[in-house]
Length: 505
Image (cartoon, rainbow, N blue to C red):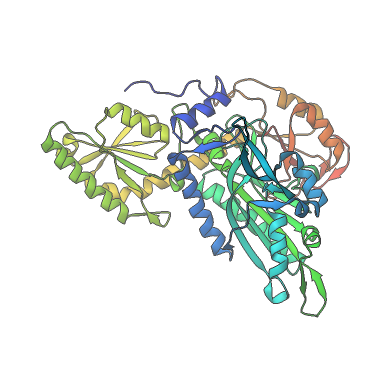
């Protein structure tokens, strides 16, 4: 089998390795518009799997889907000063609504709008305005809405999936009668994201509140799930925001309470995006290419027929079709196993490496010798490409769910073990500096300084000022585990729990 490994490797050039994995798996490519990407069928199929799982989880928790306009009047953002200030540098603005051909043959914008329109960077303001129309009394609450959409945030340093000017996401928006209900909703959706990340993406996460400087603009509290990538950096994989009554006051979102008084709603918002595809790549991919957790793999089992003569082809394909039907009748994660037979007439080695790079969990080769022996040749994506096992054909469909579950759980365990190896508890600012200045190659073969440092720091601007030269930030204050009081390594203030510090994307 030829060497089709990704070049450069993770250890040689991690950022370029990432780009090459995206390219080799045919997930996406740069578009003619700077900062934007074209998500190709392979990449979009992964996003569709993520969508399907999350959408079911949202509906199971009582949310309904709706759609709101792409364009937001500037005046709507201006009503919430803190919010608009947070997004001002990222906003794309529409000022004209027509093009005309000039005498020189150039298209010139005309028809200036009376009020500029913002291409949505997020939808709190426009959705809040609609909620204000829909909500009259406490009987209309809670209002639980989700939107699948695209958003635009002008990006100066784009990277496919991780940071692009336009990206796809979902944004949940809810309104409640009490503060307690809104806080409960905020934490419920944080748990939904954490469950999805760990169960379906096989990506261990730490959940917790962000410090004030890292909160969503206009939020009272922001909670995030933070994952460690294979270079030791953190990636914010999802956020859930308790907005208090800030946006409700700006949008006059009121309701008549049970006691007859007029009160402002308590609101939340929460979202994840196509950034999760980048997270999966950087959590699981290796120097051979993409590795997909079976739960989100568009194809979980690929059947590769091997034949030389028409007679062999007929019998081998008949076996493949039979296995496809058996796999579709089997269940993994509550769904039929997604299997397909690749009948293309191309070199077997090239075909095999294509599926390795695309991260398909199980590859099954079936040829005349296999039929004669009554077995299939099986290769798992979580193991070296040349490591093969055999299974009786009659047992394969029954064994496939177990194999997929082993791969799913194994990827999670491997990622969690990696995070644990690269996590430390530090008690001084000097120790923090030393940890994040280290650039030695880890035992995992990925060159990176640091990882996750659990450190007592106060929610104070002085902390951000001390960490900024090190290019690290406070990711969150972990909610799991016992309280561990200590003194801030920067200010000396007493704090209840350590925070996670990391370099990040």
